[in-house]
Figure (cartoon, rainbow, N blue to C red):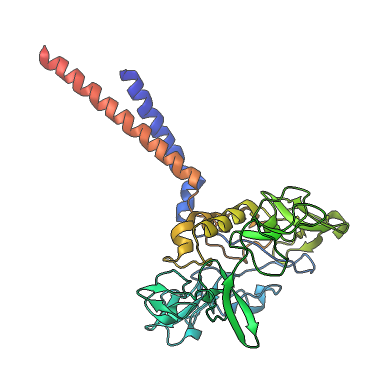
Length: 378
């Protein structure tokens, strides 16, 4: 038993040593990487020097335009160059004098001289201006009931939509229930459902998102199941498998139902289109289902929102699943705060190592005390 204890202790120390010197531990102290997206049809020769979070900037990066136009001092896509000429992810809790001081526009407003998230129906609030519905009662954003006046779906209670009932008049009305007949482009289906037909000829009904199988007819990718997207080919629109990695190309002929485009920052060509670079279908589907099952009216990054309170794990997965593409398409000109950092598998390894060390120490102490009692009894 004593030899086992020493072996476990040795194993734990070796494992911890390896872990502490490996790349994944270094990731804990590395700032998030930049992700990628671009479809500019230009010569594959440009390189970019966009600046990242916390860096000094002179402007914001515009899709399709080279960041070097400002001598490499503009923020990557996903970042904002604030009044202090610093790249930031957003202006949450920053000081402000008006809503125009807060970024991104429409997502934040200025309340009590501080940039705050605008919340959805059912979310916590402290002021009417902090609700998309414009009504904060007893600390909660209130929505309009059926037949209540609205400007958009954000004014209505969960499960309702904003329907135009006359010139300049709109009211909150019920959506179509799951399994009920529907018309594409007509009355929306209840959240978490989409209007499509599983067969030909068409028989449109509201079905749960992601229930159509490969080869089945569809109207949008939300109709399709795991690893599928809705693509039109040969006059038929069906759910089709997607590529989960970057596909290199030299001409459009190399890309089925897609284009061969050039990454203006990495200098290489890749296939772009519905069938390519779509590794996030499962994660997006899970997020949609989570929001619907928890009656979250909208997707929000606000810490106190329904989306983050109930579906933060799904939200993070949906935003981080494409990080593996970061070096193959747009390099350093797209910021994604969910890329980089400490990987989950590394945390699991450290926990296992810690458990092994604790067990080894406990066993070692036990045998040392036992041996001491033996000496004391002599």
